[in-house]
Image 1 (spheres, one colour):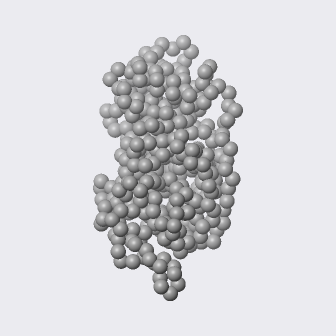
Image 2 (image 1 turned 30 degrees about the vertical axis):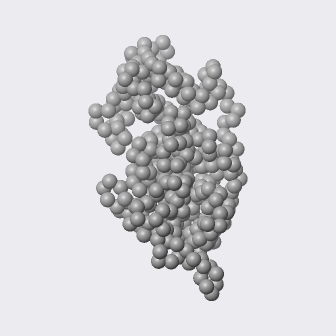
Image 3 (image 1 turned 90 degrees about the vertical axis):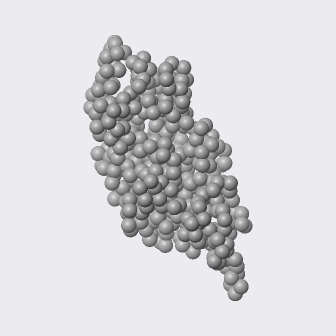
Length: 380
């Protein structure tokens, strides 16, 4: 769903075609990065000693991929023809020392690559494709392969398929001088889609890195997913995005209010796929009292239009509260692209939500998507 807060700007977009559908095999037997990562997951799960959980294996994979990114940027080559695995591993560990210095927010002092030389070489061999190729998101593929099934059980969210993130980003068309936020960012799918959008439109890599550090924001309640989102954007852009672990509905994190970390004027663009589900306890009673959509709404006798009463509900689905929160985060004239369940717009019990949207924004498009598109993915 696309809308603009208190503005008349119109926009629209067609569903983009899947990128790289006919790309040649990466290596014999691997047609896509996702297939390559499935092979790596099976290899690492069977060969790595002391680390069998998917989250731990993914962390180690990402350390090596950060080093590969440095190689792609000309900051050192870890491998040479016929190099000994131990020599290759030592070069990779040296490069990781530079990574650690540049990304202290992700890798604190003392962090090391725990994989053995054979595992490091296996990753470099299988991941023989560019990490920053325009239109592709191999890091997102790695997240889905390693933690997709586990993430499905967390908080009612799913990995947002790349065709969906690309569609909404193309529709809202963020500009390099605009601020962007995803208040339920998961593993950073929408944020990286913004970076890919700039790359596809000729914005230089250095400018994209500066943009992601200055203007790209994300929030997620899950500390691990917030960390993954920072890694995701950093790997794609080389920048340091402003991604926080916090509660977007309560506007709180471990250090207090999130408001102080966000632009006072509001955001230019908001893109999100918030958690769905009537069984999810989205907010405490004291937080619910900050939302008009947490009130009971009744028809006004004279006009029949629904109006909020002074009575607050004991529980409200998160997708309802996120509608109000997202509009509050936008500046006047800001643009919002949000994935919502069909029931939010078609079910009579949510009529008050539709009226709230129409009273506070100009709806520019409602785009139907098949439910199966989302059930093949995990959170993010």
